[in-house]
Image 1 (tube, rainbow, N blue to C red):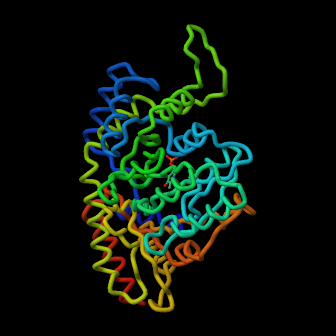
Image 2: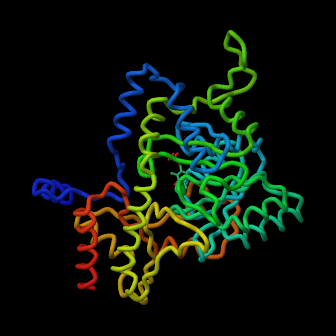
Length: 390
Ligand SMILES: *Cc1c(COP(=O)(O)O)cnc(C)c1O
C-alpha cells in the first residue's frame, strides 16, 4: 500500500519508472501498420506476412520461414514437426525462460535439464556430450536437443552442432533472444535443424506478440506452416486428417514487425552501447563480472547481465536491485533455472552448479533500446550513488 502511494507521488513529480526492456516503437512500424490496415489484409494471411518471412529469413540466413503467433508456438511446432511426442526425452538448457521447456511438455515429452558453461552461460557442450553418451549407451537417445542463446549470446554451436550430428539427434536453436547476433560469421537463427525466434514486447524487435520458425529444411518448415493453420488438407471443403493449431501471425503484426526490423542494427548498437557503459561503471568493482562475449561471436546484448559475488563486492545483486527499484528503475534476477521450478519437479537433470550460481548472483540491467539518454543517465547515476554508499 505504502509502496503504491509512493509510486504515485513519484509519477506526480515526473519520475516515471524505467523498465528492463520496454517496447521501442518508431515511425516506420506505425506507417507500415496503418498501410496494412488500409490494404484490407487484417487477417492471418497477406503480403506483409510473406514479406516479413523473407526479410527475417535474410537476416538469419535461413532459406525458409513461417511467421507464428509466438516464439513458444514456434518451439511447439518445431518439436511437433520433428515427430517428438509421448515417451520421448528432449535435452533443454536448464538456464532459460520457461517457454523453452514448456514446449517439450506440450508434445507430451519429458525435458532433461542440462547445465550451462561458465564461459558463455549457455548449454555446456561437455555436459551435452556426456548426457548423449550415457543415453546412447542405454539405447535411449533423446528425440531432440533445444539449445538456448541467452541474453542474445549464441551458444557454442561450433561444438554443439557436431555433437548432435554425431548422435543423430536433431538440434533446435531457441534464438528468441539472439536476432542479429552471430558466431563465427553465422547469424543467430542459422544453427541446428530449425530455429525459433520471438517478437514479444521485450525482445530486440516486437510485433507486440509473435514469433517465427526458420530453417534450411523446406519440408519441415512447410509442415509447421500446415500445422499452424489447423492442418487443412487441400480440398474445397474443410478436410482434416490430423489435429492442427491456430498459430499463424496476423498480417497487421507482420507489417509492424517489418518496420521494427528495418532499424534492427540501430537497436543492437544501442543495447551494446549500454553494455559498454555498464562495464565502465561496474567493471572495476571487485566481485562484479559480466556475461562474457563468446570467442569469435557478436552478441546483440539483448540484456546486460552482471554477476555480483557478495563476498568480494560487499553487496549482493538483490541489494543493487532494491536500490534501483527505490529509484523507480526495474532490474531483474537472471533466469531461475528450470530444474529449480516446481512446474518441472522430478524431471531428469545433468548439473554442474553453474546455472544455480548464475541465478544466485545474477542481475539483468535496463537495456531497452527505446530508453532516452536522460533515462539511461538516471540509471547510471543511481548505480553511482549506490556504489558510494556501500
Ligand atoms: C521470449 C522467449 C521465448 C518465448 O517467446 P514468446 O514469443 O514469448 O512465446 C522462448 N525462449 C526464450 C529463451 C525466450 O527468451
